[in-house]
Image (cartoon, rainbow, N blue to C red):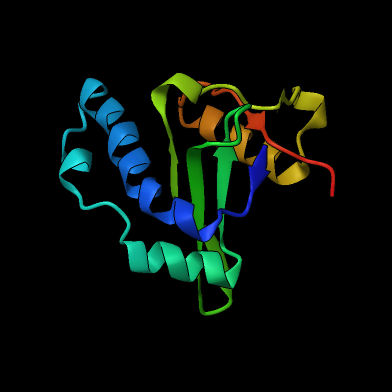
Length: 127
């Protein structure tokens, strides 16, 4: 499930980020591990502003989080961290025929530059 975090869960998120970042060492990007995790203050502000979400285990414990930032009217995903054990469990995988136009254009551009195709996993929930 993806939901807004409770205030008492904020302190867990830097630990999740640090654990998730260890995967970058295996990918040859050790510099990522040297970067400081998101601060408690920035995570708490994201929670209060409705820009922070947690992915939870079946026991409703945070196993990942996403932090969105906004600047000059533009929003972007600033941080996405998921514990290793829980990675790759998207709710659904899109087929190319389901891709929105923007994603098809991105794929064609990547492909024309020799980039390998990558899996598109989507997460959704009923609202």
